[in-house]
Length: 202
Ligand SMILES: Nc1nc2c(ncn2[C@@H]2O[C@H](COP(=O)(O)OP(=O)(O)O)[C@@H](O)[C@H]2O)c(=O)[nH]1
Ligand SMILES: [Mg+2]
Image (cartoon, rainbow, N blue to C red):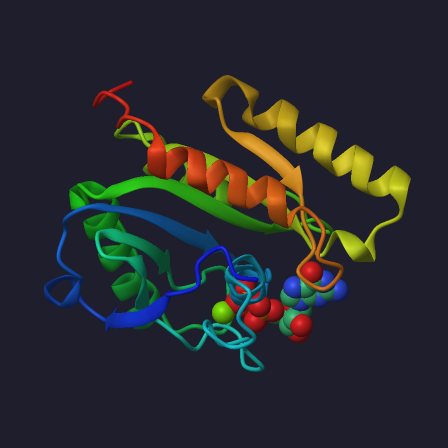
């Protein structure tokens, strides 16, 4: 049974003028290309192909909006960190992301998808900073945890939590394939949707 039974694709934006109307609340998903963002979104909403799982990472430079119910959205942000992207495309990505994080009133939180085998990278940290800059929440999914043994997953969770603690960013292990951590992640998202908005600058 889906927690988001009515979720549907709303619109895609390649530039600021194409963003969905900025009302209500939305939670954005970000991560390095190939980190497992599309798989995580599909697992969380119990759809096999709402967000496409990519065979050619780094190609999509679109912000995709999905409506859960009117005025509540999940947003799939374009991936980053793909080495072969031309400078022109990278700059366009940067411009779009800066615009999005600087102006988006309805953005209440960021779910950051991090491959648990890589851990938190520099660009991931930048995404967290952008998200937190205006009092929004952030939560890290250390995904593909099925690829790690118990000891490795405990270590990466501990290290990431320590790195995020000061910023009040929460972290968890996650696996779309093994369906690990789904309830925990949904719990965080539901909590964000229900909570009063954090005061600006908090
Ligand atoms: N083992 C494992 N592989 C995963 C998991 N999630 C995604 N992948 C794989 O990682 C690759 C990239 O996944 P995708 O969801 O397209 O990543 P995106 O580029 O961040 O959207 C694909 O080959 C997926 O099958 C997971 O939880 N476990
Ligand atoms: Mg994807």
